[in-house]
Image 1 (spheres, rainbow, N blue to C red):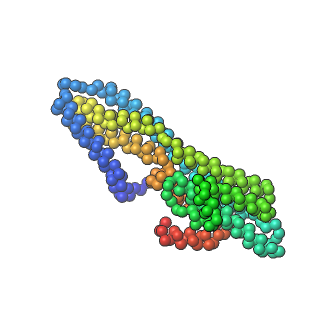
Image 2 (cartoon, one colour):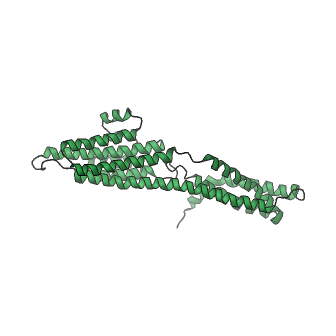
Image 3 (cartoon, rainbow, N blue to C red):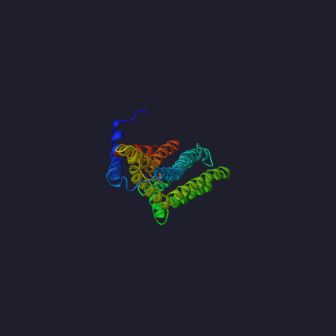
Length: 307
């Protein structure tokens, strides 16, 4: 795989402080061992070996837990993609006026408007979910009418309030005879899936990673970096500086790599790209229901923001 030179520069910029800290510790501890402590105090190599082995298990455990959170977040938003497309397809295919289009063109137009309204509500639901999980993102209010904005504002949870508006839209379609009861049940099940996925995402967001394990592992990690050069210096002299720098940085980097994906809904390069996924869903859904106005507005927005 081709890696750009800029990627290495970015990596060095983000890690130089940790590399420098490890290097300074290695130099100081090696010099201390060779010139001050030699013959007075010696650390058995077995102590560092056991600590390094235990540390590897600690880091592996934390990284596994972090990856599970990251992978579950990715699966949740993958489910949002699939279910959202199916929802748009159902709304487009299952809704029809109680009379033929030829005899009731106004009814056909009313069906199209309701289809597009339900899709706009779902886009608002997704963007409100992004805001709830990330704390920032695109505003969802442009997808709502003035009355709907007032309704959503009066609720404590915007995604839940919008989901209620979706249910009301389906109930309206049933009252007008646009959808039969069996198909209505299928669409309602899809809305149930959205609420389930919202709950799963909120569970990840609100569940605090076990900080006790993190702090213990971090303390053990730096203790290992401090003790390692003192042990190696007695065996290989000043080469202990290089070995400590390489081994210590590998341990620190592995630990930090796991911590970088603990909160998968942030906006870091390794996190789940929920805003980008939402934009893809928005384009797909607007295209399914033939909302040309919505697609034109989206193209204008993207062009203006160079997305």
